[in-house]
Length: 445
Image (cartoon, rainbow, N blue to C red; front, side, top):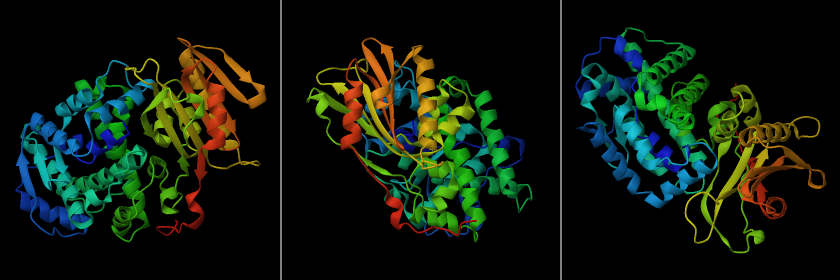
């Protein structure tokens, strides 16, 4: 879900804070809300904003139109196949259809940058209308000044970077929304931690009262919520660095590179960019397999992967040292379905500890423990290559192999292939550290 399809949706979709239902906010005209949003965000609207009122189905149609400009249906299906193979969503889930159906029930408003138009769902209730307008106008205002379309990285092999940008966009709009909401209550200055607590409570209430969202796979829910919760925490961190909104504005000029930077804002501030991992053709495959999908999974997805089988704290610690990755889903040529798909992943980890390998070791252990629990299989330790092999059934195997601060993960490969694949990945895939010439974006607090 943090892939390109999800991130593209998240730039448009709005969660209305449930806290708004306890306040007496009457429907306001567009100009009145625009004036307040401009004052909160410390930017002036450069031109009028187009507004349309449509129901939930109309919202989804607007999303589909925008998505079709960038993504073909086969690309969205391939992204879904990756998450199915990873076990993050059910194998029988219709990824595009089910996610859009989920949003149709919940969406209150959206802003479509390509149309420079905001859509409001009147079915959300008049008491929500002004709050929804404030959120969408926050998007429109930023779009007029920074051009959201031009800031999006269109390379189709790094959904984690697009997910991070979506988190900046949504975090910005949520920071504006809550300031607007509290302003209606006569609260001019609101402590930043308090904003995050209120938003988290609003999201938890939404999950408790929403039918489809409550029943959705945890990975889908977490992916939808992350840009709002973690995104606003990230924006609040930039606001704390000040002055005013200048740090947030810099976020659009120098967008975050990864979900890691959203989860650990200091890594964004100090410009700790992820390693760039280049994949090379794999001779072991002998031209018999084609690429289904290529992606950067990122810290968020590795956390979600391990959290499927282990506790949150273990998963958080295992993923926290992420430094970059590249993952490719392969499929035998001429076949359909995910039954014989397998994953090849190389990840790089921050150097820590006396020998610089602590973070890689912690991820290796977390991933191996999670896979062993998931497949209910015994581990085979391959001493000559210092790797762990797990037979997953159906004539397939998984292997986790660490070499220094790099970890190769082969998942669901045909029996006898994983060891050879891991060796070729380590010898032919490249890892480039882009941090050698980086300068901090903001003063480090």
